Amino acid sequence: MSLHVVGADHPNRGGGNRRFEILLCSPGEGVTLVPEPRNPVDPNAVMVLSARGVQIGYLTADRAAWIGAMLRQGREVAAVFQQATPMGAAVRVAFDGAVPVVPVVPAVREVGEDAEPEFWPDEVWPEEWE
Image 1 (cartoon, one colour):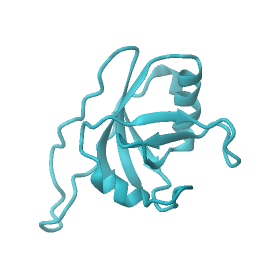
Image 2: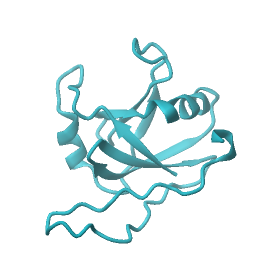
Image 3: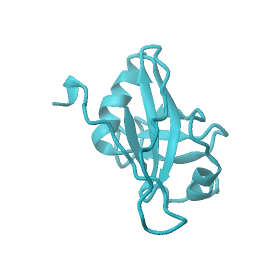
């Protein structure tokens, strides 16, 4: 399942630029999801750290509560970097011992040589989200 990572334009607490760190990430590279129950804005926030331990943003609020609850309950959630996006990034997650796989992007938009692949989220969501 693919999830958006937002907040890439905010600075990290100890310095560092999230957008720059996103540029250093490679598709398939592991990322870490960290619940932040003491986050003053959203107690359901889930921080996303690159393979180098640098924050690249947060899961969107609509998915953070669900993913954060799974993490707090000890459910295994594996995540990898999928791609940079205009909002920040996309990560791919898998559950209960499954290995997340970065999907093959079907096409590049016809807007020039520097065009980025489009984000292709999953069409089917888990029943818990309905």
